[in-house]
Image 1 (cartoon, rainbow, N blue to C red):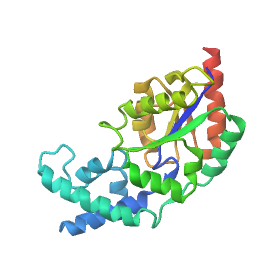
Image 2: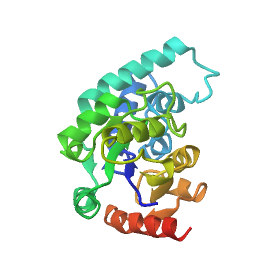
Image 3: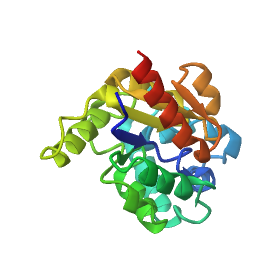
Image 4: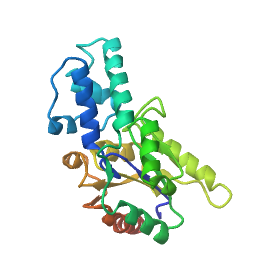
Length: 239
């Protein structure tokens, strides 16, 4: 089956946002009277949504130490600060725009969307700021549904929406005709849980986690995406 839908992660896949996220967490910690954490430590906390990032930064990922009101206050400060500073140092990875343009030219029938665990408003604002939104028919965030990746709810919703958009012209898109593209095991697990294929980005924020849950194809840079799509299409035909 030829791929008909590409679903991209955001942080570590399309953009490098590590400094702005780390600075915003450290601003939160200072606000709470806590010591700042090294950026390389905070980097390992990114990927499972804003609230889990805050919990991990507070040393309480399981919710055993702090009450929910304290965590919610910390989360509110972090989101308010990040909303203002989300574009201080964030940038689009080299080759992303060129790769998306090539995909659109070579595979004009393929729909593209974003599925991130970042809250949806900053995700959409960042994509709009950098002009990435022109490539995507939808951008869902970590608060768009009652669950986050690796739960496949968002992925399946994108498949359904893309199918509805093409309802007059083609059969519904199948999960097997969908490719999830991301830099962490969370993205690969999302693909597996939703019955989709996957491309792992080894240049991102959590490439080491791709060894835990290997993707169908690895991409060392965005420039590798078109060839990775071709490999998955060829592999699907051979099955």
